[in-house]
Image 1 (cartoon, rainbow, N blue to C red):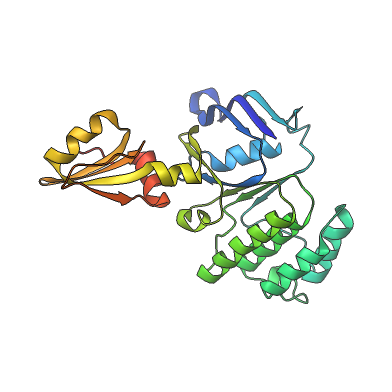
Image 2: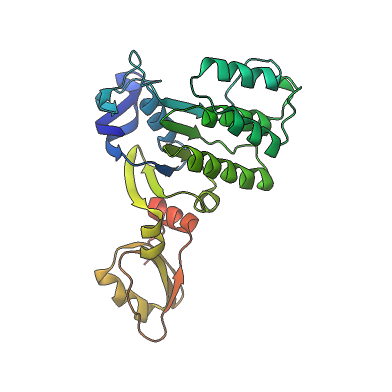
Amino acid sequence: MIEFTNVTKRYGRKSTKIIAIDDVSLSVSQPGIYCLLGRNGAGKTTLMKLMAGHIAATKGQITVDNSSVSTSRMPEGVNYIESGAIQFNIKVAELIKAAADLQDGFDMEFAEKMLTMFRLDMKKNFKQLSFGMKTMLTTIIALANQSKIILLDEPTLGFDAIMRDQFNTLLLESYNTHPRIIIVSTHLIDEIAKITERLIIIDNGGILLEAEINEVDERAYTLSGMVNLVLPLLDDLNCIGKTTMGSVMAAHIFDRRIVPPEGVAVNRLSLQDFFIQIVGGQNNA
């Protein structure tokens, strides 16, 4: 279980300080695949590094399994992997064996199965792999160990569409084999939506939304039609963005479902469009 209580992280001196995480309280308690979304610079990487104890909070408290987390007291059972992580420049087979020797309970069967699926050449040195394959190998090693919490920071950078699809298969395979907390930071929103269970959106260093994906699917939608028909409907709804073109309006909603009057259409709002609207939707009159 991960618990943040009024956590703030500042960088720099007082005159040039940057607030990366601002008074965040967050609880992640149940096993599942979580998606962490945010714009560039929103604080995603800082949040993950705080969870793993790689950096210290400026104020507030962080606990994992009820034990305080700090740089001098990094939590056991938390594995943080960032895109472009560097491994020893040895052969893939030797790297996997070293990981197995160092980690109790390393799932060699899972690792070998994934290496075959992704066609990783066991005889190649780490530096000979493409950027995407390096990331994939590092992720496989992370998922093959018995860590209770896996933090993956932009793991699909450098992946083509086929590799991203295979990566989702990898996550599901790992989770089904060893249910635990897996938090994935990514910009490929609609792709991760296929496998994630819960969504965490961070914006300007604060938690903007924490919700089940099913809740977002149910409550996020678009009302479109003539302005004089759509506008009155918004008085009692949470409108996260709207666009007007002449006499036509599209209003993006995150609220209860309604039965609109004739002339107003209801359309599904994709997770990516929902994210765009909730972090910076247009509110044109």
